[in-house]
Length: 476
Ligand code: FAD
Image (tube, rainbow, N blue to C red):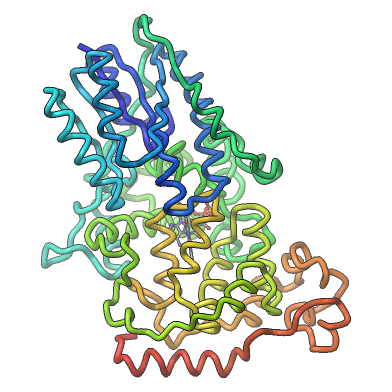
């Protein structure tokens, strides 16, 4: 009997249900399908593509220690995946195929096609819920439907997590050596040039991710609730990239918190302190958006969660959009954040909300353009969280910010970057301005520093946006 484990957003050895179960049943080979066309079609960021490739090189080495060969197939087209896997299964006499579920519409339909195609070869397929601590669909409200309010979902999640979360899978024991060797030669064609500093922020490998998790828990988690909103403090975990690639799991994050606090899971939220509670809550937000994506697949297809908001008359202003993309809006905190994104492939969560609201509520530009731009730049690009974050900010989403609560970027900057150090770091032309003036330089001061004046009047724009939502009779 030969087993195949099909890897996707689960580039790791520890706590990998598909890999563990395959290896416990017999000789196992791993496969990853490269689908460049899919990456291009959805505009996946260059940095995430490069990180996938680098993690695959690393994974090949780690799998070799378990005597599991890794075959990387260049399928080019997404549509070719089922056929390519069927061909490999035939060549290797595969009898069972193991995979972890992906929840996006295209990925799910790809899994279904693979399972159907392999069934024709009498290959049995085993799928596992892996991306969430609590599998999508397993927490429902009183009407047996998906929760649409985060706080209620989170409460139920906390009450049931110990019963619903499965234990971690161990690292599998090495299997006997197989005659087959790895073939990852096609990976070298995908070693895209990315800025080395950008790449070096995300060292490769599971050990790196775990070091980061442990360091964060030891040093930062206790004060997370106070410091997480200050972009210059570097007070968050920076684990999103590893979570998006599946190099580490949220189960492992939860388990690390359990070990650190020496509390049972059910008590974790009650007794482990405000910082820990707040951080765990962010992991629950991540799960919530995945549950929404599964229950409302329309969000994968560019549709707003609140149907009525599809009628909002977004502006088609390419000039404003370009200024936003390039960090030239004349609003320093927005520009600093966009420049952080463009130069590092990451943006602080508070600023993701600020720039998303600025684009949608002040420039009145369609959230879908912002979502796509983020997806094309972020190292942690992840459909569920990105879509969730954008629709939250645009007030088109599930349990979104009320449309009349529009962040004023100047106030946000004064509050969360009080000394202006974050703006100074990314908007170099303003670096010499002292004090509060850096956040809202006068026209004369901006011109003197070669910095643009604001492309929009915030007050007028915000009032106009509120009127647009009101006219649609959208619930806040
Ligand atoms: P921490 O503060 O350490 O949080 C721990 C983990 O919790 C994160 O790694 C992440 O997995 C999860 N998390 C934290 N905040 C959120 C949130 N608001 N929603 C969902 N999960 C969360 N996150 C992505 O992983 N990929 C994206 O493409 C993405 N796009 C976003 C777009 C917008 C407009 C907004 C407002 C948020 C987006 N987020 C996205 C969520 C959040 O900004 C990032 O997860 C977070 O900034 C990552 O930094 P960290 O790992 O240091 O987070």
